[in-house]
Length: 254
Length: 254
DNA sequence: TTGTCCGTTCCGTTCGCCGGAACGCGCCGC
DNA sequence: GCGGCGCGTTCCGGCGAACGGAACGGACAA
Image (cartoon, rainbow over the protein chains, first blue to last red):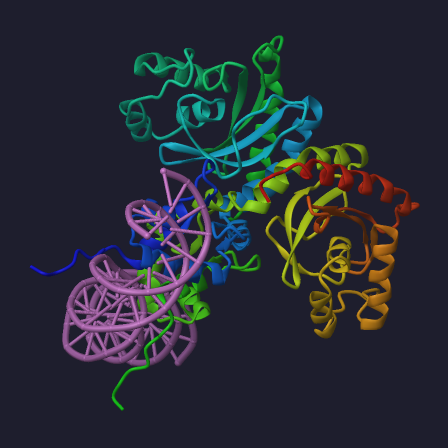
């Protein structure tokens, strides 16, 4: 049995695994780290990385480490929901920001996670750890609760069946309790997440509906946890969400 | 002679060619179009596309057409200069926006082109066609002139040697005239591009310098062409640029 | 000096990838 | 109805691109 163990994954899968190896915590990697994380051999990583650098998907610093290249920006900016939804929503998000000077976030659901599509972060606002393109679980954030509350029953079941991470002592992790929260979100038309991700932040979120009245996205305002009467923010957020929904209605393109 | 013509490009090159096939003008493509643009056979495009969809780099609409997937956002947002520069610059860009309520743009140079890294676009501001991640020639926009004026001599020569596209009647396309413009930009410390891209817009731009005092980016304000005394905006833009430069100075990470 | 970890290059083997061909489908115009 | 067209999908045999091991050179620390 002198045969060597060969990697049977497709080349594409390997390339994508290499891109996946980069995380916010480790935005630049040596070739060895890259190979290790992607689960491919060093010579292979060397070849693939060289190709990616040539195209611009990666770039290589003076220290020899690899980073994500700017070329990907160009392609990624064409993401469809990103494009259409973002363009429509932006003016409303800006209005919301100008009125409140707080963090404004726009997110869509992708499977059992949410993806932030747009974000306006004031320098005076409470710092948040989100980033455009970033992902998060659905059960803790304001936008996540809205998206989950209006997701298909099958998605809700899967989300509730999975173990729910407790980010703080306030995070709701019991399925039954979460079910009640989701019902309240549907009833009220908005969601409030008080210190469920970080204790010093509180978010108020509202659903954005597509032409078919299905919830396709959520917008939220993230404020300091000690903000007085945060509930008074709900109408503001809901108004923005409704405005976006209305603008989306006559859209023929998804 | 019975041998078939096989594509000798690497799989990676094909995958990247497929991503490249998507443009702002054609953000969604049928499989056939995709194959044609990427220069690969239909079965191959089918296989590669399926892998990309599985990973999330592409998604497939109900009409069967392919679009760029949101997953790429996540990766692209880790782009290094994007990350660091954006985070540092954002507060200053926001300030600039709040004072003026005009379009604010941040761009870096990439070869003979500029890439927009960030943008704040007010709904009341003049519409511009730029997009984060978008590319543009260097010789016409305000940011482009700043980046070109401070680029290495070799880059300037190449840029001036290439044919310069005339976007409007006001675009400076004669190399000698452009040389004078660039000298003025260096002398003044800011650039003004009046109607050189579109006749109804005017931009004022200033250079952002890295720790080594080299120009690494440019920030601009785009206003309506009939704005009174646009030169009075220059100090504002320069102040923002200097603030960003100062914040970058103690940075140890590039 | 030795050991370790890095990146790079070479090489023989092999299996994943290739395009042609065939097929099913929906949509025309005749 | 019926042939033609352009889709997308699947199958197949041949072959070359991609694979991992191995060897090499450089940087650095013990």
